[in-house]
Every structure is written in structure tokens, then in C-alpha cells.
Image (cartoon, rainbow, N blue to C red; front, side):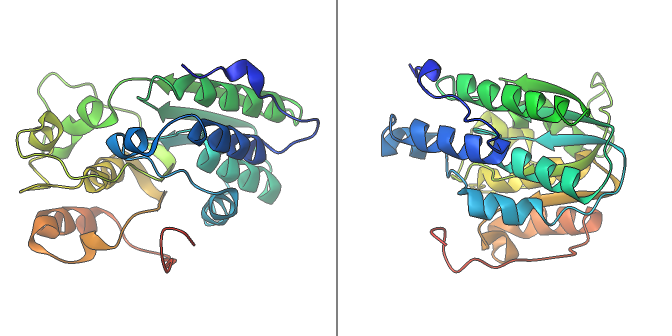
Length: 243
């Protein structure tokens, strides 16, 4: 169990820097096996700042999705950039995190973001969902959706460093996403496909992913689906995950 009382914001600290410290603190407490099981790759603040800077929305009110938020460093960096680049009145965030040890730190980060935005007179509301993002939203991948599914309000911006690991064919997430993946799919591609479907027209999808989706038979169905919805505007190629 993580003791989230032992780390707190510093006066005038940017939310992204606090989120970065929370991530460093968390990784010092869990072993590599735990991170591997959860497909966790924590984003350094420099990369989070770069990714956030790709957003260009000028809307005064925004609806944002972070489907695998961790300590919310990407969301914090994104919002800092949006606030610096233009007048914002309100921001609504939907975030997902399923690691029970990490959730208290996710909440701590987002609560600090709330205080930071409040000091700038920007209305901020967030919902931190602790359920599986894929299972909760995979029905949107079918042509007409599930008969009993509720149509979800789309997002202006979706930002993520999704988990990366292969799913067994019989995994319920692979089965739920069979419209867009086959074989032993990597879960990051399912995150991308669902997010593309949840995006508003002319919305912005900002993801850190491996390059494997660009080729290979496992990703053929995904590519056909994804590129019917998404038009690539910008690609930044990292030499390695350590860059």
C-alpha cells in the first residue's frame, strides 16, 4: 500500500512537476514485475511537456480523456499548455486508472491540478474511474454499438501513454475488441481504437505508442479501422523508450 501522505506539492509547483515526483515516488516502491504486469511506462516530465504542447484547441471549454492516467502527468502537462496558450473557462476531465496502489496518487495529482486551476479562475471537474477502460468502452467499436449501450459524449482531446502488453486470444478485452484486432493483440492498439471512436470530429488524439501498429498482420484490422477515423497531423519519433 502506497503512503500518499509522505509527498505533497511544493509552493508554486507546476502540476506536471508534482505528478512527476509522484511517479518517481511510486516507481521506487513497486518492483519491475508489478510494472510489467500492468504495462506501466511512466512518462518523464520532459516528454509529457512535449506531448502536451502538440494540442492546439482554442475552445474556451474543453472535455478531455486520459484513459490510463497513472499520476496524470500527461493531463497536467496538456492542461498547463492549454492554459498558457489561450483563455480557458472550464475543463472537464475523465480519467481511468486500475492500479489500486496508484489510484491514491492519481487522485492527489488531480486534486492539486484542481487547486492550481482554481487559482487561475478556471472551472475544473474530474472523474477518476477505477474500472477497465477497454471493457467499459469497447462496445463503441462495433458498427452500431451494443443494443443496450449508452451513447457517450465525445471528447475534444484524448491524451495517453497507454499500457503495452500482448493479450491472450481468450482475454475478455481481446474478445470485446475483436472488431478491430485479431490474434494476440497488444492492448495499446485497443486503447487507440476506442479513443479514436470517442473523439469529437476535429478533436485531437495525442498518444505515445510503439511503432508496431504500422506494419504486420496482427495490426492489419486495426490499421484499416483506425485510419478511416483518424488523420495523422504530427508524428514525433523517439529513438527509444528511454529518450
